[in-house]
Length: 267
Image (cartoon, rainbow, N blue to C red; front, side, top):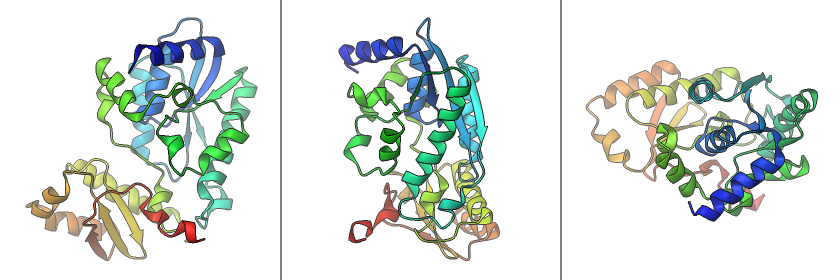
């Protein structure tokens, strides 16, 4: 990361003085929280929303990270919002509005003036409906404001010696389910258990997309050939069937961000 970007980021955080960071535990919010925690005379708490559609592993990793670096951390529990129960196309906007309104309530009750999130400069160049909700709620995105990209975030974390630097990007479990589909707790746990199992078997960042009783596996770059030749492939298939899927398929295109968004523009 260029020195001027780093200086500008520090300047923003110092000027804000008192803020909440919406903390998912991903690389962007982790970098932002870590940087804020290194600045003196700043009142900051990292707030994580725990919902039924967030993997438990992500929550646990968020807890571990804040403990490791001595950061103030608060977890807020939120039930499944019924307004997104059927996974509508505007899900991300509706969800962000609900989650950040909850954070705003906590900030107000505890004397914090601003709310920040880890949106980076790359994010604002892609289709992200949730950004509209952030704008409406006056959430600040310092990384995007100073032009810090995802690559620069990872490089900064690596330079600082933080193991999280190469953590795969994550997204809520609702992104694994087709739009206009009623979402059940059981469906979410099936996805979480399947992805957790594949993570343990050496396939981090793998997505398990659900199409009725079919599990469509999207591997990260470099893992497609590995899983095809994996001597435990049959064991992987059997395990996913035990979790509750009837058919197990491997997407030959591999991982694609927003692969469930196909056809959205036509709507």
